[in-house]
Length: 97
Image (cartoon, rainbow, N blue to C red; front, top):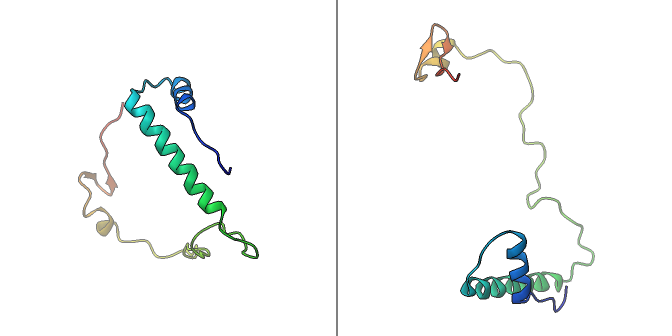
């Protein structure tokens, strides 16, 4: 990736493929932004990562789910107390069809 640069012609080609019309100002702006992004990738590539194991997630997460154990259900009145509409012991939703 070293030295890779995006030209204004390439930006125009990408815009054409995406059926996007760009002004000259936007073409210049995107050309500059794409090249800055490539420069950041070059900086990342320059970091010495020998001996560092690959990571798949930035946090060392283990199973974060609670155990799947049967529990006593909540009382119906407690579950339905904030329901905007209800009918007997059920939530009532607006008719869709």
